Amino acid sequence: MFDLIIKNANIIDGTGLPSFTGDIAVEDGIIVHRGDDLGQAKSVIDAKGLSLVPGFIDSHTHYDAQLTWDPWANPSPKLGVTTIVIGNCGFTIAPCKAEHRELTIKNLTNVEGMSLDALRKGIVWNFETFPEYLDFLESRGVGPNVAAYVGHSSVRVYVMGKDALTRKATEFEILEMEKIVKESMISGGLGFATSTFEGHNGENGVPMPSRLADDKEMHNLIMAMSSFGRGVFMLTRGSNTSIDNIEKWMKDSNRPAIVAALLHNPLSDSSTFKILADISEATNRGTEMWGQVSCRPLSMEFTMESPYLFEGIHAWRPAMECATLELYKNIIEDSNFRSHLLNEIEDDAQVRLFNGDWDKIIVREVQNKKYLPLEGRSIKDIASESNVNPLEWLLDHSLNENGMDTLFIAMLLNSDEEAVGKLLKHPRSNITLSDAGAHLTFFNDAGYGLYMLQKWVRENDIMTIEEAIYNLTGKQADIYRIDQRGRLVPGQYADMMLINPDKAGVSQSYRVNDLPGGSSRLNIDGHGIYGVWINGQRVLEDNSIVNRESLPGKVIRGFHS
Ligand SMILES: [Zn+2]
Image 1 (cartoon, protein in one colour):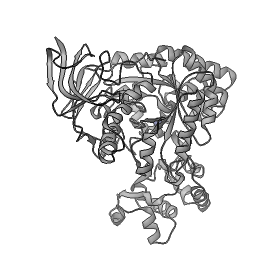
Image 2: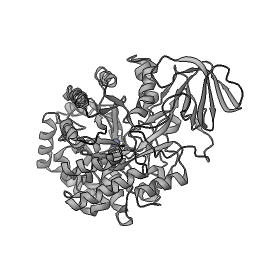
Image 3: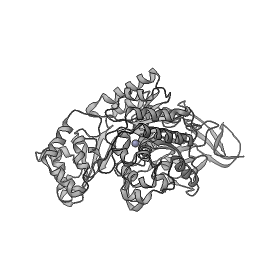
Image 4: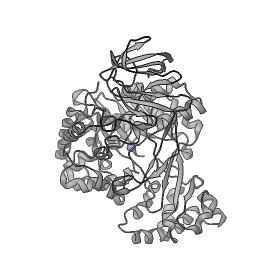
């Protein structure tokens, strides 16, 4: 007698092959049979008219901090995600000495889009080293399966303290970092993750520590990662890091490199395709590389109190560095500051979030009723009406009464559907980039898997549902070397989802106030999803999490080469 049989399902098994009608039997959390008339089980589900697919493997999340207070990594499992990869971009919370906790939190607050208060109140510091962090998650339990990168910025702070934010590492410090990377890989790290991206800054605009690493540090830490013949290198690329640079860092490691974040920029149409072409060439020369692409338009909500979209702009730095709101107001009023900023924004497009597309920035919600007529209009539109430059209008508005509280939404990147469709179909693309767990005040793309089915399979028809599911499951397992997951075949863990393929999709995001200390974040709901199983345990029924107390996930510590 099996534990579970799901019968009469349209099985899309995560291999990319055509779907078929059949039954699947599960015992002790493992898929043990696939076919027809498999016998008896304690629980039998008739899935006629529904599709059974592998649970999504979300390979780009930032749940490192949240997992310490929320073992379920909400909202991912209710959106069909059964395995999450954490530590992306090198933003981790382990290793971390007690005296560096505040510094680590300050680094994270900006990139995670969580208030300092939420992180201070939320993070449970039951560990110091990376192995202890994994042990803590494992003994406490996790909802979804978790695979963790060793994060460069944390390793750097652990060895260099505050200096990690300001200078290159010495030979001795690099050696110390190598030891930590090795010890972390032995304990079950998925790989090593870092960032050289200019938009990655901590509190008051201090660069994330990994951005100060030189070529030698990068190469040596990648070699440390690869010492045991395993490990995936993950990098969020800044404008000065070429695919050529990465190829040199990877030399002799014989490991794959994953490059983020390849978002289509309408002002520099060809640049993302050029990177993917470079990635293909590097792969052909012998360094396996993948480009992380996103199926979601990148929209983010912001107020002028902390406008994330300007952070990649050099001339914005003085504003970011202000310690108080008063100083900040003085800076953004300054005409010199304004003209530098304007010049840089109008300068030709670079790898950065915002390139002067003012028609894409819309007033979403005003706090002061007198601004109500502005809601729903673009800054370009509003500014041209009063004959001022859009930047001047925006800065002036934020200095007006309650203007700092006006909520804007920016539709910045990845909104050209023809171009994004091409990115999604590129052979070196890895469809991911939910950034789930981070940027919580700007957007929530944790439902990108369901959105992929809704938008790109049903509406735009750029690929079959079998191909889309393969991209979100089996291909993820292959790229990240995750054993026994991502496919519905005997011998694999029963990470599964039952969906109505005609309805699977996501809602609009909406605001909730449930972070530690009551701070807000954006949330999102799934549609057309009937059940989710993690290691054979049902965790979602009728759109809500069931069996909340029993945590079925595993901390994944073994990966193939
Ligand atoms: Zn990220």
